[in-house]
Amino acid sequence: MDSRPQLIGINAPEIKDARDMLAGKNRRDPSLFICEGLWAAEKLLERGISVEAVYYDNDFFFGGRAPAAETALLSRLCARAANVYPVSAKACARISDRDGADNCFIIARMPATRPEDIKLADDMLAIVMDGQEQPGNIGAILRSLDAAGGAFAALTNRRVKLTHPRLIRASLGSAFTLPVLDLPIDELIAWLRANRFRIVLTDLTASRNFCDIPASGRVAVVAGNEHTGISPVWRTLPEAEPVIIPMLGSVESLNVGFASTLVAYNIGLRQKGLM
Image (tube, rainbow, N blue to C red; front, side, top):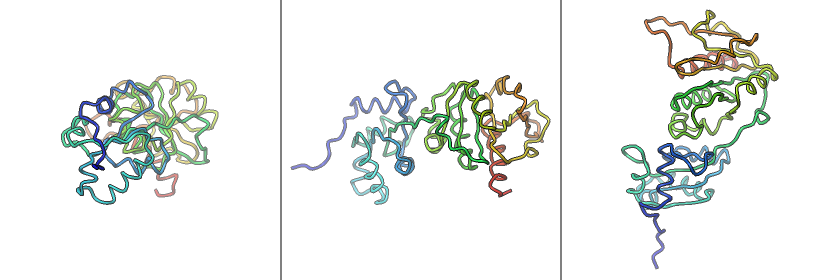
């Protein structure tokens, strides 16, 4: 009797579902996201995040070519998944949107974060992304915030789904390991003010150097749209602290992801007593 698992055919609807998700065409369930590669497995398992499906190259993992540690990790992940699909290398190439397709694809459910889920502390750092349009920028900012010891992020005037594949990839998992609020701007401002957050605005019209603001307390750094900047309402808040990153060369500004990283690291390191 042949004990080898039945592979999912290259033209199966499950392959099309995964391919559509990786192309950013997730019409089935907007709370699902896809990761190409096994890099996300440990984070998903540690956080107890719901895994909807795992696709893996059966010959690679169970044909003696994959490192034993990777095969063991895949087995742990499959034990937690609602659906497991052994596939061929050709099916992996069909799913992938790039040359050199990976040997594994994971579909998981994005955790939902509500304001009451945020664990407040005396000193904490957050980044608010207001109207940003580039999934790669949002993912990179989440990654930087995580690395700088940030507590949570918030999206407002959202124009990109948090489950966008390029956002997930750029965040290296921070999109689903960090709490991320998604609120209308008036609700977000009211919540920040009610919880005594200092609101720091990255603003090209500011005169105060970003290094000169205090780092203590609850700090929310607001990063605006890549082209139009922050929404005008932020500047009307009496407690808002506009800051600028000095430009020493010929350019007028940094990419919003780099700017957010500089400001977040400056505050995060000082909050942790490392600077």
